[in-house]
Length: 89
Image (spheres, one colour):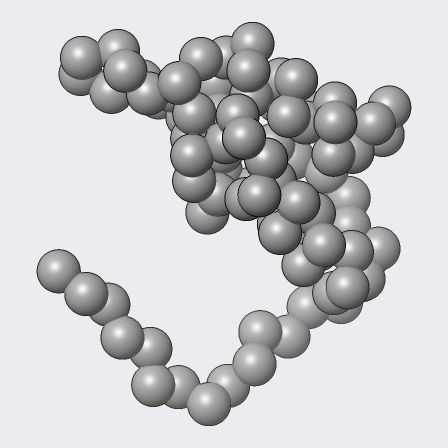
């Protein structure tokens, strides 16, 4: 199934704001390492979200305060590119 969003509307946020990234990886510890690598010692909350039926994947929610759109996009791209993260939503 492919979801197509043909809306021309841009997401409008007022910064700074709280933002949640959903991270999917193979194990909790690997996701935690990726977060340390990307956001360093920055204040955040990390909460277990779900695990696949077979236990192959885990998802976690990363909550933090974002200062601007560039920062939001940078963190998204850095997490997505990290070897321990399979998917970022």
